[in-house]
Length: 175
Image (tube, rainbow, N blue to C red; front, side, top):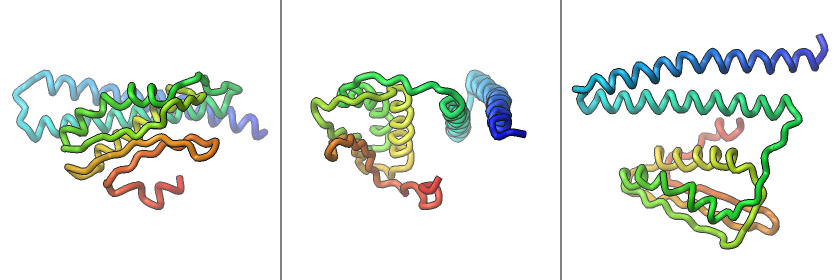
């Protein structure tokens, strides 16, 4: 079998696996919603449902990432680049996270870089930032600040998310 054939087979397999994983996650989500709609749940049960829903969301995000990576690797498709003012992008992106941060007595601080424009695929940048900011909030201790900053380092735009959580393990950083 040629390398190209193996690559096509891998691409097909990823598509099948992703599709097959979506179905049980959708069923778990539906059952979770039915339980929530039944009412009369205590605080612990509501918390467990919330945890279950977050796990389903994470699973769906992993599937979507897998399919996106496979799509870009297996095609000549390029990211859809558009010109974006980074401060405008961040000022739209961050407000939905503020309530989750407030719930943990966390102040979400944005340190921008005025008038910086970049060409990016906004959908992918949004997903990357969503992952970083939501994890920073989730894993930060109560009462600690999270700083999202944008700066220019010569010709390179640097975006960072600083938090006081446990961080990413050395093992996971190697992936």
